[in-house]
Image (cartoon, rainbow, N blue to C red):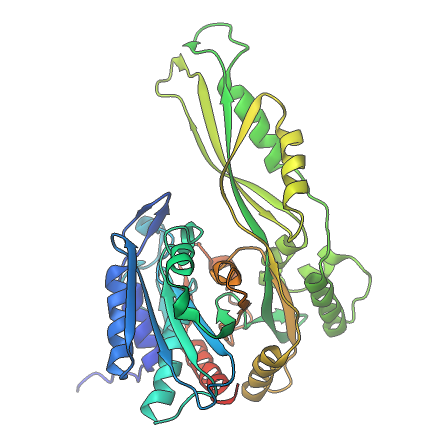
Length: 433
């Protein structure tokens, strides 16, 4: 008897295909490149009858864009954008091949299933639903897929904005990743809509000392100086500082849970698996992510380096850097490897109302809360053109799925029915907004 193959929605098929392109981005200009994934995306759009344009400012770092004319071209255009690169994956740590795009028991596995080839597929198939039916979106939709987002966009969106700003002519708002997904709050489902992003500052700490033999008495040791600075910074407990967005989020959580004790951390912990993600948005974070020193066991090096990933609340960048310099002390130099801006836009307006309404239409009675994301997206680059960016990759998720914990983690996965939910929500948003 032939084996019955279950129906696979197109959105899951496209996401699986995208995962199979190993677009790993190691940072610092070292990456596999997005060219083949961009060509796949471009061919998909061209099969819909759309005109695409490619921009590859650096070899294999490929960006692609298409515009879908709307019914009312007097309305400002809306940008739907995603990135095609992913962070690397160590295959030995995974339960599946991270670049096989495997679907198992109704769940899509692989690097990019969460960040963000799921949303890339939702964008493509939502647009396809309208175009194939002979429908037009309400306004012009600019569909763009960037390179290099996982390296801060320095070889992707930053160059596109600088050299191809005409791609975004007439646009005032944008939608991208890391928002619109559901979380469990005190036994209830709620959705987080991303209306802000912390600033990113990648630092390198450099300690210098005197080189020498490992057997000697050696107080001027660069490794010791660095270790003390890294430990001090990594263990710093930064104070809670609320923004307009996080204040609204906490008020919403208090309303859902009935907990109005006024402890932000305690309220955040009521979100279960998402709590670590949310607690990080209430304060600055300084996480050591790399160490480099020495070349032989019995040689004391004259230089030691550490990488620190700093995420700063919008508007507090300079104050945080001043504090960091104080914490690491005068014996360690600080180099800024990359720095971008923080963003915060209002949880109000026609687009926000439309996104909230579509979530309510497809999942009635579930509250939608604003939140400030601890990471960053290519919305920061678009903000240089005056485009207000939101995170809205709508996914209705199981309460026990640690979705936020899979960003850059092991065994990244997303339910197929969540992808299909997101495609429907996005398609209806494009029809009506």
